[in-house]
Length: 82
Image 1 (cartoon, rainbow, N blue to C red):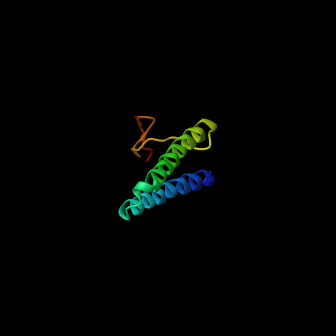
Image 2 (image 1 turned 90 degrees about the horizontal axis):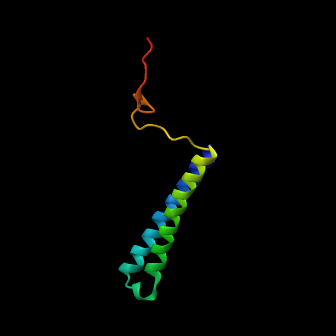
Image 3 (image 1 turned 90 degrees about the vertical axis):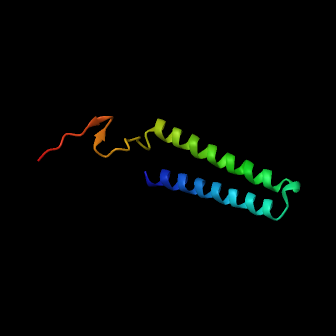
């Protein structure tokens, strides 16, 4: 499901952009206006949305978790056929 990956990437990019906006408002001294806190709150919201969307995608069967080690499947070594 290519669209699941696209949604996750867009949400992660939005979180990084929000973090950049918070940094810029902090550097420019606009932290007292509440812009920094608002941008950081959006970043936390985007990150939580990514986490919840990944959980929902796994529960709906849109994505399947897999092992990190390519020589193992479900923690067991993969048999090599020659």
